[in-house]
Image 1 (tube, rainbow, N blue to C red):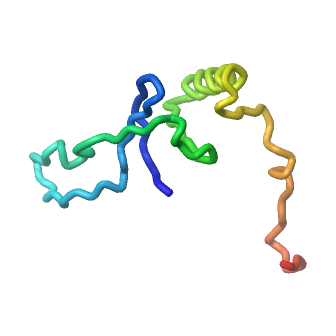
Image 2 (cartoon, rainbow, N blue to C red):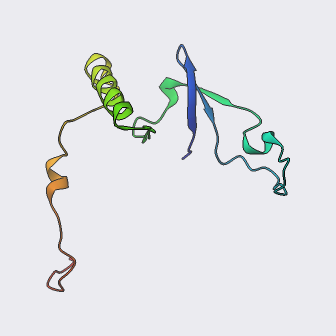
Length: 107
C-alpha cells in the first residue's frame, strides 16, 4: 500500500508527490534552503491503476470552500459515479456503544 499527495492531472494521468521521500535534515537558521521542504521529483500514475478503495482527503479553508467542494463532488458523483457523496451517514454509523459502563461483553 502507498500514500500519495495528488497535485494535478492531465488526461488519464494523475501526478503525485510521495510524502515518504526522505531527505537529509537541515540545521534551522535564518537561511533554510527551500528545497529541503519539497520532493525533488513527482510521480505519475494512470487513473485506472489507482486502488478503488482508497481514501482521499480535502482541505477546506472555510465553510464556503466546504460547501463548494460538497456541491462539486455531488455533481461528479451523479455524472461519473467515481465518488459517492451522501447527505446522511450510513445507518450503521448511528449505532453507538456506551463504554462508560462495565456491563458490556465482547464475544
